Amino acid sequence: MIDDYTVATEKGFERAVNSVLEAIKKRGLRVLHIHDISGMLASAGFSIEPLSIVEFCSEEFASELLRTDVKMSLMMPCKISIYVKERKTYISALRPRGFGDFYPELMHAAEQEDALNLSIVEEARS
Image (cartoon, rainbow, N blue to C red):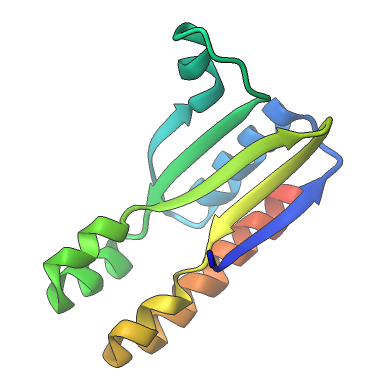
């Protein structure tokens, strides 16, 4: 099962995406890419409700992960999804705290990154 943190917001989709971007940048993190998944699928003839994925990076956390095991790159970068389901907008983040289950030496860093991601979601929601 996916360990995620998902909240509903009263904001519309575009405003929620912009709020996530602002919260990430406010924390000094790097936004790597914004994937317009619904737009990409629409261009191929498939229709879904709005969905974007924001990829971002904490260079400090990334370097610690990669020093531990380069294969951790498979779970990078951090992502937050913003989507609409049944006319309601949601903001959802994968919780990196689980990295500590595989690498106990990463537990402290994973818990810090987890708290950071949750703070981004909470700020963007309000």
